[in-house]
Amino acid sequence: MPAKFIGREIEVTTGGEVRVPVSFRLDDREYVITDILDAWPDYGFGRDTKRRKRWWQRHHRNYYHVRTKDGEVYEIYHDRGTGLSHPERKKWFLSHQL
Image 1 (tube, one colour):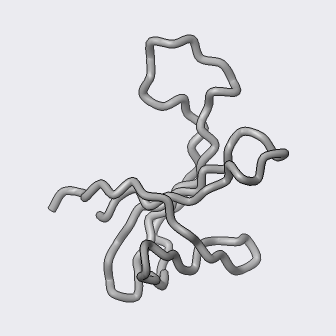
Image 2 (cartoon, one colour; image 1 turned 90 degrees about the horizontal axis):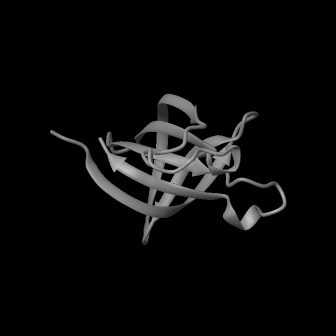
């Protein structure tokens, strides 16, 4: 089954010493994360190859493949924004259901 694109902002609860996601909320449903299957940072420029690339245009994201208590697998990411002085730009997104 191909991945289903969702592309929505979510609320995430983090925990542990390294502050990893432990649950997330989409609409009125809470998803409890039982396993982090994979995690990686993204510092790329995205798919736009036409524009000149500058350091401030890079992504600053942490991606996670997670399994929920119901056995569903999702790709979520934390968009850390580009500046420490703007915490409102740091958001979590549910990218795909895998």
